[in-house]
Amino acid sequence: MDDTLVQKAAGTLLLPVTTTPWGLEYSVHECPRRHRDDVAALFPTTSLDDMLVIPTCQQAELDLVRMGEKVEEEKDRLLERFVEFAKVVCERLEALGHWADYIDPCSGLPMVHRDTNAVYGEVEALVTLLGYRIQNAGCCKIILHPKWGSSVYPASIFAKAPLAAVTAAIDDAVAALKDRL
Image 1 (cartoon, rainbow, N blue to C red):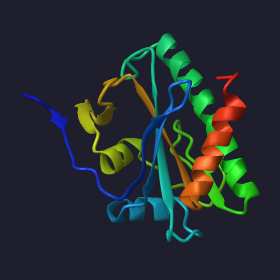
Image 2 (cartoon, rainbow, N blue to C red; image 1 turned 45 degrees about the vertical axis):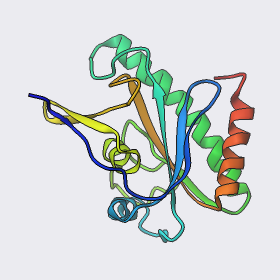
Image 3 (cartoon, one colour; image 1 turned 60 degrees about the vertical axis):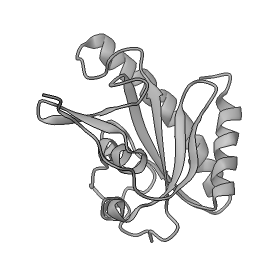
Image 4 (cartoon, helix red, strand yellow; image 1 turned 120 degrees about the vertical axis):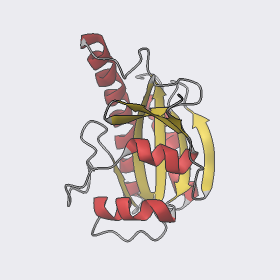
């Protein structure tokens, strides 16, 4: 029996999946209607008008469904890489007067605007935004990247800014971090 679940992507894709020189994939989406309640719970004092969702994925060297010290070290490595990238993107957008935040993939909590204890579901977001498949793994659902399977580390950034400002901030982050990541 195949327990892989597939759902159709929702929302408007503004920038298709793009890859940084160090392999982080990202795309930019308008916040879809079926995703709005989750995002509103994360950012209760922020209007969702013009909210953009920027899901990212990094290929892991190990299957992250497994357990053990090596898997935890790999998750830490990918977390640090994402946080460096997300901080630069958010700082660039905020310097231009735009609102931005990113999610700590370990806790699911926002890292800049901490007005809530609501947890963001990265797995559900990738299903909604990109139509990625999920698989049941015990009591959890795991994302299946189309190329990497479960060797994937997802994390998200949110912004209220024009697409041009978001892509410029991402380009700045890529340039600033190219020698460090």
